[in-house]
Length: 190
Length: 144
Image (tube, rainbow over all chains, first blue to last red; front, top):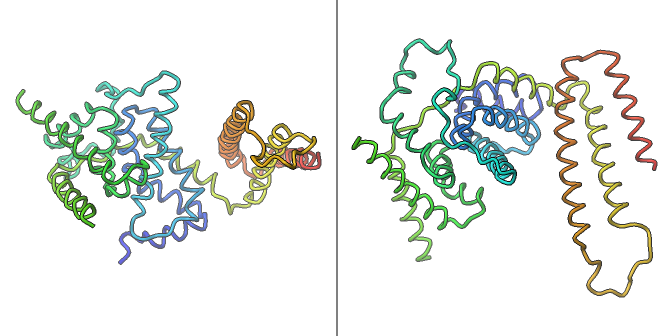
């Protein structure tokens, strides 16, 4: 089983086939952009991080051993770059904007403006509420929620990426989830 | 083993709680952003005709950094053969090391930018000439 010919695409990308690498961008840019935007909350920074992520993929794809977790591998690269960027900006005294104003929300592709199943899901109240509550979390809480829930990384993968023990990752996830639920309940009472 | 079991139970319970959350939607980047990133990855792909050339001057940049670093960090001089602790690392050396790492990172970023421009001008004789002169410069650097 090779959904969408991913195995073959990755094999070609591993040989540095430019068309295959461009196809990976086409397939995964929405997912990667969703991750870095949710982590950094800034459209311009997310644009940069998207490009940096795929340039790093070009450099490292030869070392990637496909085991059905390509997206997790990709997300780890993107999340690491987002962390590096946040650290750089913090050092320079430019903390990332955590809650981008509504007019700075990511551009919506006009070609996708026709209402369809995906769009109806995207406007689902529960999803909107969840996204808004995640935006309001602290950077540390938001990071672990986004890595687990959006990027679908396991807690073991998160622990490895953040270089913390599994127990610490689980505890952080537990606390962050508690605060997220509290925020969602608060929103519901309004 | 007890600790591992406890962690696994904790993890399973937490996974169930996360599974109960509604899914988060993807976020679409601007189309022009996607196109720009695609152009960048095409330009960065290595096996194109310019691949070896790029590797050559990238290697040259790395070598230049290494030569500079080694000359400053370990200048020719008497070697303390009897020091069991080995050479001391001074604050200046650490700072210099950090500077060299930053320089290396910057040169890589500059390289990426150059490659994007290069692919846009593929086949331009001026670009080829420029690369040849850069190669010669690095060869001289290496000889030095």
